[in-house]
Image (cartoon, rainbow, N blue to C red; front, side, top):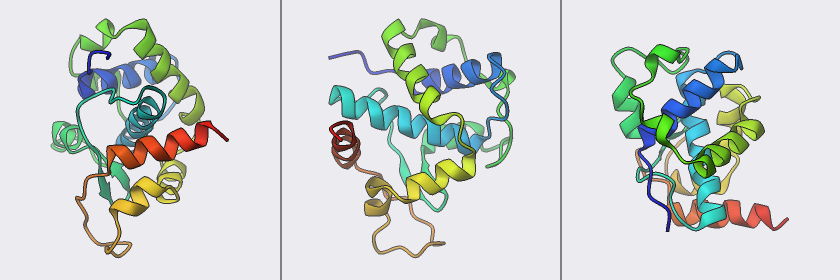
Length: 159
């Protein structure tokens, strides 16, 4: 079993990679969705979590509370994430395998806008399942099940 990573290190790597390679605007909302997909696909491929932190089924899609709380004083949903928002140097210590996994997720998803990523998550079982019983615009902090994420995305691999 691989060492479980710190979500902030993974987040910092995503910020670094997207900003240093000039991939454009990275909103806080988009960062949340990219982290969600990074975790979801890691679960699907490795049957294990990349980082030990969960996502909640918020109105605008999956949100990690720890990341939200880290930035909530100065970032809003559509605020641009900057190199200066990187929290530490831990992202530099991520293994090449972990970086490759994140890079693959970014290659697949970073080209989508935050609104497109939000819409995509709204059409997928993990978020839908966690929001059962909630209206479209009702606050929800139900944790999205790792097992449902793993099974949903693993099934997509086999197609």
